[in-house]
Image 1 (tube, rainbow, N blue to C red):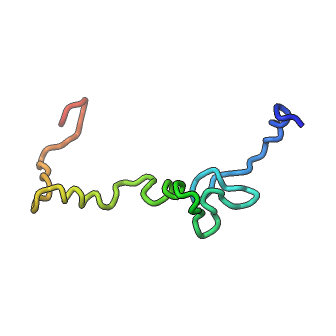
Image 2 (image 1 turned 180 degrees about the vertical axis):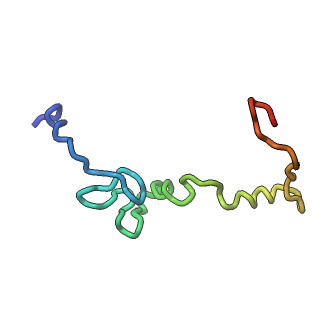
Image 3 (image 1 turned 45 degrees about the vertical axis):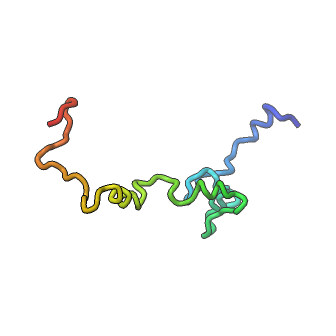
Length: 101
């Protein structure tokens, strides 16, 4: 048996494809199970020996608009009874050719 060119021709088919739940290319087509999240199992795959992996995939590590507590942090920094600077009326902030209109 050779390890080179003749073995490369046998690597035609795909074993893994996109997972519906986690979006990674870890869904084994023949087994019908995702190696990363365990789909179609209702419980998400995770082991205590992979504590760092759990930390990477937990809530708050993906795309977020803003964390829910950010508004309260801004309010805490302002003086008591102050709600922030009011916006000036009648002033538009549209830029045309790098000039304010």
